Amino acid sequence: MLHTKAPQIEEVVGEALQKAHHLGEPLFISIVEHIDDQDPFQFFETGQHIDQHRSFWQSAENDLTMVGIGKASQLYAKSKQRFREVQSLWTQLQENAMVHDDYNKKGTGMVALGGFSFDPEQKEDTPWESFPDSQLTIPAFLLTKVEGETYLTINALIFPEDHQQQIANQIQNHRDSLLKKGEVTGSLPVIEQTFEVAPEAWKESVKKATEDITAGLMEKVVLARELRITFKENVQITAVLKALADTQPNSYIFCYESEGDHFIGATPERLAKVEERELVSTCLAGTVPRGRTEEEDFKLGEELLGDPKNRQEHQFVVEMIKEAVEACSSQVEVPNGPVLYPLRNLQHLYTPVKAVLDQGYTLLDVIEKLHPTPALGGMPQQVSVEYIRTHETLNRGWYAGPIGWFDAQDNGEFAVAIRSALIQQKEASLFAGCGVVEDSDPEAEFAETAVKLKPMMNVLGGSEWDM
Ligand SMILES: C=C(O[C@H]1C=CC=C(C(=O)O)[C@@H]1O)C(=O)O
Ligand SMILES: [Mg+2]
Image (cartoon, rainbow, N blue to C red; front, side, top):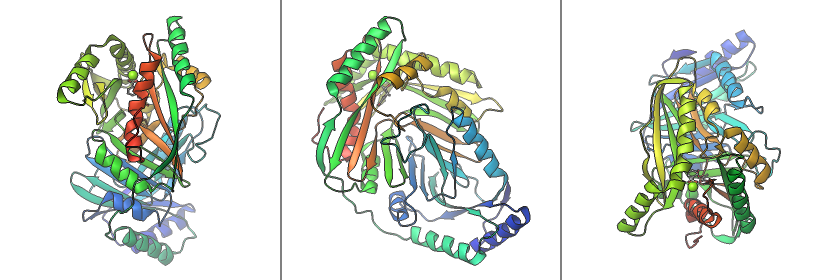
């Protein structure tokens, strides 16, 4: 990879064309510029006129926002080895790339954004036809807000037969229209109908899982259920996204657009983050609602910290993550017990795991080892995933799958896509799951999933919706 100063687009395209001719194959170009402050939601909104393939990511710590428009290239892999395949496609793409970047900030330049389905062995496609087993996009235009500054990356794949002027003009025009100032004006959707998919059968499945756990089949399994909504009109996605960011602090705000469908959510659950080889993973499992008063809130939090069933749910996650992290890193630090992680509608048990990633491993290697953790799959991993495949009637698709990004400097972060919805024009499917252990009570787990549906319901016109 070649690093130089950011020159005129036309010049870069010309240079790339010459090289592409010489090599007889396409060449990837990436140009990073420092720009004036830009509203990411407006950038996302305007981007729909350029390509209906967009992505949005805001970190839970709110220190990094990225908005991708269009696709300069994509990384796909279908097999069980999908994480490795994506990594090797990424390495290949970087070999033939010309990068013009004066800043070298994380999340700028060549960045891949996207995700993976929960279970690549799930045979069913519906309703996830637009979201393949893995789809990572290197956007044509990427807005990055990091360390209080704003950057625009232009990425393109230049083919030997391309026309210099035409490509340069097109990039320039799109760039200029994306950076025009404006307001996001859309409104939140109005619900026509909500439909909880088979609630009684779901409670039965929780009961059956507790029996199977008692019989020794496994120790924990996470079971999810679905809520379907129809709206009066097509959902205006930017308005929903902005409302999510406004109402869900301490959460990753994400949206992936693929062939007109949107997968959107506000998840608190980090899978792994790597920055300059420092690795952070997070155990988040065990749940109670927030209280209506400060007193009630405190009481609920204390009860959660002391509750054996929730502590057990959490402990399985800690054990598994610790083992997976130890397999690829050193200086692993795990606190002795969990603390509370407060969200707007619920509070969780939280244990961070820190380490230094060993040489030779990448973020995707860590994701491969971790996914799914017992917060989304169960314990043991393989048995619980198979149990979910056989007993859960819904198709998880990207729900509970790893979503995130990585850049060419091996920085990156993945979260798990919970508290989320698949939105298809006038329809949405919302998903929520819960960790079932031996002492789980079906009614209580049902109530827990109802609270987990709230963050999405509240921005989808369901503010009156209560369990
Ligand atoms: C599977 C979900 O939550 C997981 C993450 C945190 C707490 C959980 C729990 O307490 O059951 C779940 O393991 C979901 O929100 O759909
Ligand atoms: Mg739970």
